[in-house]
Length: 148
Image (cartoon, rainbow, N blue to C red):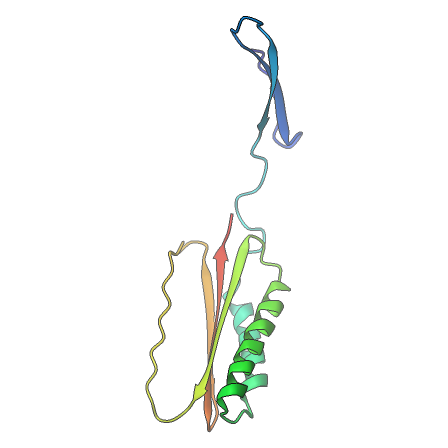
């Protein structure tokens, strides 16, 4: 087998010939791929930029909203879609974006929300924003989950 030295920046695949010890002693061409891609994100998820988007969208939707179960469900879905679209425009490469928005009636109740993930603490990030008016509360979460 012949050794060939190729720099990763020069090519994306390396081809070499390999002989077999079969009766025909034929040569086969085998394709091997060199790792030439970058493993780290060039534009990592930025929770501060995302929080500004959460605040902007939630203020627009919840500020003058009166509680109606059907309307609040539609507004929560709309807010989630708007947040996801605006966050994707920030081009955080190698990140999957997950948005969760809850809008509910304010009636002197307590509310505990918990999300659990298998988390890579060095790369995965999130941002959250809470808003309320006289009749409703709104909570928005946006998770940036690193994806290789």
